[in-house]
Length: 376
Image 1 (cartoon, rainbow, N blue to C red):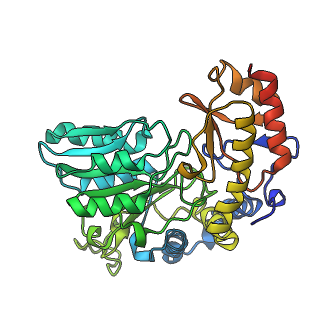
Image 2 (tube, rainbow, N blue to C red; image 1 turned 90 degrees about the vertical axis):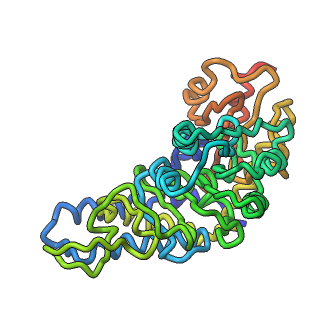
């Protein structure tokens, strides 16, 4: 277990911030890396363009360590939606087949599939929300002989209710379906092993649980998915042996062929590397268990007040959705923010997502504020 790490964040004591599933605050080390990067960018004569690719490869290596993949498996993209679009462009879908998704799935892993299904004459197979918070049985039942693609998250973005990704991976391989994961709400706060899950593609934005800047994301591509077509064609995703003034039609023989243009961002990559280095120093298992200790406390306090929430065995350890008996009152989030308590409304629930800057005192403040503003 990790003790509270508030000293590594710039979160004042009077702030109880529980909205990390939207944005995590920067670590002090990440902000420092950003300031240094901006200063360096102002001195352009000190920048060696031949070294730019090193920053991208360092980021690939660190993200690969977080999900148990090698550097060649990772592409750098600007957003989960971009990564999912790469996956969609490189997967086959025929008329009469279906794509399995969850009810109220996050849009970045939904809209592109609706469009792809419409163009192919395929259908969307939407798994309804389970009463007990356990999505896995419904997902396994929905994936059948007519399923071409299962496009799913690691946990539901509204309340943290879980899927057993390894079991879903087994089912997809049994029926020959491609498996695409949006792991944005999992990676960095939850143990995740692509070698065990074996997805075709896995996408992750960096600004949530990776503690990194916005407009940066990563895409994992399985070995058999590294020969597809990227969304963009530029020098960075072509044969790196090419020389200035010459051209090569050969794409990189790795997931880097899916890189976005200008992937070697001089500001965001140093910040992301600082963040992922800290995550690995803490340990993904230690982060998950430490955040689980906080969400267990939140669940206990919610249950004492009659709030509904997914049971422990069917929810992620790092965030939780709780629903008051009378629903979420209008204006609640604004009223809590006026008390320096920050959460998010998601569907019928109040989504509470802590990080290592939080402690029990923050939870006490959260529920004291809820008691003032939520009628029981």
